Image 1 (tube, rainbow, N blue to C red):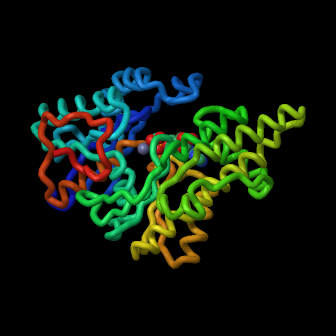
Image 2 (cartoon, protein in one colour):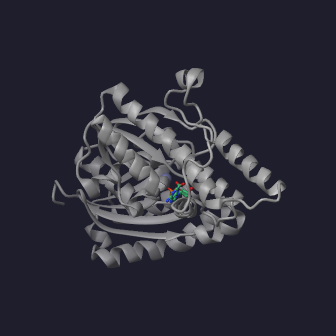
Image 3 (cartoon, rainbow, N blue to C red):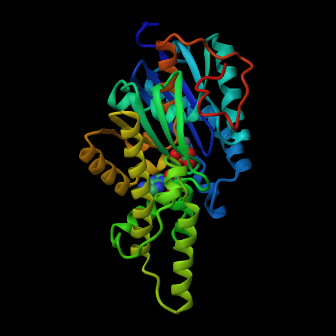
Length: 350
Ligand code: KG4
Ligand code: ZN
């Protein structure tokens, strides 16, 4: 192995994406993803058992595709990395078992890494080494967190998270209320472009007075979701048509306003100059625009990976695995468990 450019294969199966990525050092060679999202659409949310079975079907073909497209042979790999948590237990298990099989068969070190830290590390393959510390805002269907990251391989500190729904979950639920397809985020984003963000004054959770004092870096989106549903029901009951674009734009504005305000505040409180946004909701066009504007105003640098690297993928796991190798971290034991509730502070399964 070139000591500064280890070739690492990463496997991600924490939710509904079967991701297999390969990196060489800090360079992305391939990012192969198979998604079972269509199989969940009619349920309006991810069904764990369906996701696990889809991972089983997709795992070997996705590994093969990653190797073919990158020209990397399994024998060329220096290490295997896998998401060991948090996520859906059965789904994680498929990835962890597959990674163990590869590690044993190839006699290569195995790194079981944290899904949230991987969302942060992936930006290294697009924008280069992470400033230390970096502030990370992770927003997806499963998580909404503010993390202070002095060292993505070893030291990740949670500052706050959602106390009810995740940001993406709120997008998905509001989309359903508006009759838009699952997953709703991209549809709400698109509809919002035709609407007015100030048409309806929806609530900003945990953003003022005692709530803000007590939950400075926490989020709450369940009250907002209910407010949107009530507003739409009232319109329907009155026999009026629902202005979908205005509701989408006003809802989206409320979410994005709170996310960006708290993220900037977290940077300022902690003397951090670099903000990174990751997770599926980071694909949101309004979030990107408002985050950029507020970071410019506050003199902060903003990093947002391209949308394909924000949603769950294997490259993020490979990217963090490569950092583990580069920093000389000890590999995980071969009997490492899949840990559905792995705390964010555990970056590497030991
Ligand atoms: O990171 P991800 O692929 O999977 C999870 O770990 O959850 O995130 C998926 C979430 C879904 O809730 C989806 O609606 C949301 O990200 N999402 C968006 C956008 N694109 C995806 N939310 C708002 N605007 C978008 N453009
Ligand atoms: Zn994720």
